[in-house]
Image (cartoon, rainbow, N blue to C red; front, side, top):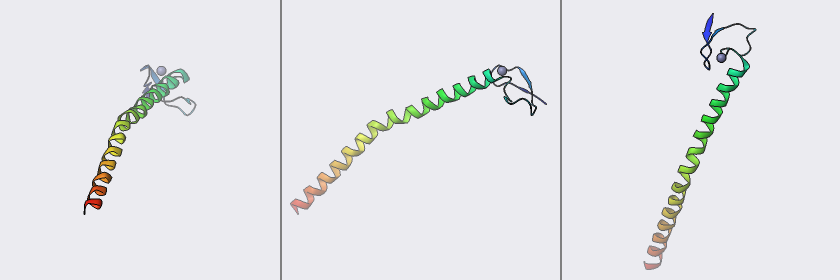
Length: 76
Ligand SMILES: [Zn+2]
């Protein structure tokens, strides 16, 4: 059975002895793992920067709610 190396598109025989399958070589496997790792880092880095301002807004909302509750508590 032949497969194409996902990294360099060379034909690779799918064999038990080919420990890097579906890659043709360790180099191509490392390149693919490196791509995956950098993509994972990019995805992991995204929510952190996006959720930070959202969390700050949540805290402000909670504080505003507590302030309103305190107002009604003291005025009634
Ligand atoms: Zn390759």
